[in-house]
Image (cartoon, rainbow, N blue to C red; front, side, top):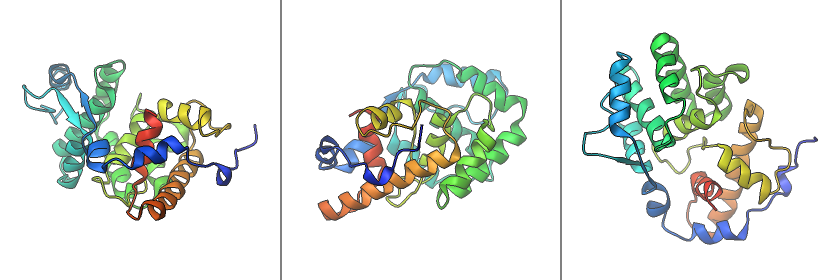
Length: 232
């Protein structure tokens, strides 16, 4: 299938209506229940740093929580870097824990490689989506086993600490389904996206965000559009 001409795709009206709502509610306040005890137990069993992911009485995480993590992150600290990863995975998984034990074990099997990939990705994420994506998805493979595009792009996204000009954004199967079915990106595919596709995706959302920023008279972050694509 020939690549879809993304310059012709228009933002659905329903998304424009959603953008009228406050960013603090739609983005910072986007909260997911997490399996706190499970994460703390599994990380400890793998003899890895970064636990506890939250206090024992905390059973949910928000985007705002992870923005704060990234803003205060010391990427030179193995413990802080892995805690950030665990919390991103916990938020992204919610109560669906499939493959997370395998992801934890993959880090335990080669922590040096995982930490190097994470550091490179976080450093590049603020400026270069292609380089950042390649750090976690080199040549279409996972730098950390079982961490595909969905979770890799969550790491890249949260690396921006919620900045409105952050160029990386989440791409997962649910976002992709809306892009295909509603926005008519016919050639997108369902998963396993190459770096070139991720870069095109970020550029499309950036164009839409710039158009809507002029319309609303305020800066619209690309994540505000992603949030609607995730659950229109």
